[in-house]
Structures are given as structure tokens and as C-alpha cells.
Image (cartoon, rainbow, N blue to C red):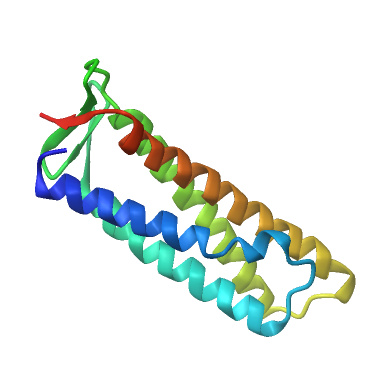
Length: 150
């Protein structure tokens, strides 16, 4: 990608992926203590900030659906407009992330019964796994295709 805006977007996306990969412990841990929940909460808010930065660079076109990064349309060398799929992926990550934040806020504001502890852990693990899959797919789109901005 030639533009500095595209480079910034890719850098944010790469940092996002690195941050997600640093949290693989969430997927394998069977019990979470209060410090773990705090760390997960910090993680969610950190990646939300990065996602906000990425999303602020995207401009959504209406007809036909397309996305631009700082005014440059995202396509691959075959001429396929990646904008719609990038938009869908970013929105899906945001929705999943907000679901995770909601779970953690619910824990902080309401006492929960110990027998629901495992259920909450599984929900958080599913959120993290889904964010991991979505962000891996998004980064792969930018790394495995020759992306150009027009």
C-alpha cells in the first residue's frame, strides 16, 4: 500500500493483532480471579481504543458499498473492492468487543453467583476467540493480497 494513511491503518491493525495474541492465556485459563478480570477489562478497553483509531480512518461509501482509507479506495490487484468486507469485519469486531465489555461491566455492577463463574469465563473466552479470529482474518486480507489504494 502506498499511502501513509494506509500504512497507519495497517500499523494499527498489526498492533491490534499483537495485543490480541498477548492474551492467549485467557483462552486456556480455567479460573479467573479479580485481577484477571481487571486485566481483561484493561485489554478490552485498549483494543477498543485501537479499533476506534482504525475505524476513524475508514470512510464508508453508500452506492456501491465501498470503504476508503483517508480518501483512497481499498482494492486488491484483481480489482476486487475489499471495502465492504473490511467494513463488515471491523463492525463485527466492534460488536463482539462491546459484548465482552458488557459482560465485564455486569460483573462489576452486580454480584454473581459462584456457580455462574465458569459460565462467565466461557463467555469471555468466546469473545476473545472471536476477536482473535476476526482480527486474524482482517490482517490476512491486508498481508496476503496485494492491496492498492486508488
